[in-house]
Structure formats: C-alpha cells, structure tokens
Length: 173
Image (tube, rainbow, N blue to C red; front, side):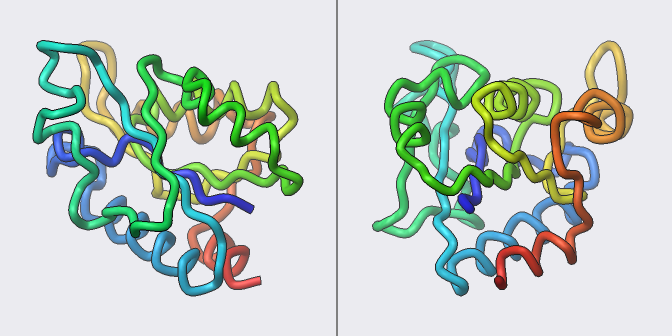
C-alpha cells in the first residue's frame, strides 16, 4: 500500500477548509502511522504556473509544515488536477506491485476527485479514509456538501470508503 498525500501545500492548508481541525488531525495521524509501520508515503504538489502564487519558488507552493515529507520520501509535482498527470508519478505508480492506494489531502472536488478516478481507471484499489479530504466553500456548494457529495455519492463504486480507525488498522498491518 502507498499513502498518497495530495496538495497539502501552504497556499491550500487553511482554517477555512471544511472540518479543518478533524481533517488536519487525521491527516497527520495517518502519515505518522504509515511511517511508523513502514508504509510508503508519497507526496504530490500542485504547480498552477507562473504568476499564480502556487508555483515552484512561491511560499504557498511548499508542503505544509504539519505534514512535511521526510528526506527519503518521494515528492512529485503535477500541473493538472490528477496526480497521474505527472509523468514521473504515473511511471512510478505503474511499477508498483501493490495496487492499493490510500488517498488523502486537498481538494476533494478538484485534485482528489481527478486522482481517485484516474487511479481507479488504472486498476488501483482506492482507499478513502473518512475525514481525510477537504475543500472550501464555493459559489455552488459548501465545503461540507462537496465533501459529502464526492465521498458518499460520486465515488461510491470507485473506492473502498473506510472509517478513520479502519484506515489506521490497515496501516498497522
């Protein structure tokens, strides 16, 4: 299994995210559990391009201090919503024998959604722990509605939706 941490960057990790405290607590705890139990943790950062404020060299681009990767952990950069849009990430994942991918991070209705669908299409068993993806309110729905809509409806047939405790148990095995 790989624990995939998506877009946990300074420019996105913000208290305005839906259920911020729970989301951050669970994200940090899953990363710690993965590390303790020798489960690979892979990070992906979004580069929105020059002038966006979210590109290499911008402080907002950096991975948030609460979840900063260890020196030996892999970090990939993507320029589109799906992590599989990164050629390096895609090639790395294609080499994996273990096809289980636990996905956590930001934002539910953008990069998490695209990555879930891309992983499913490539034959990965996608695991989504409860309370470990989040997003902001937008013009169409609240962050809570978006998180519930994707986690409980859109991904219903694509993922193994598990409780936080079930996810922790998976990482301990």
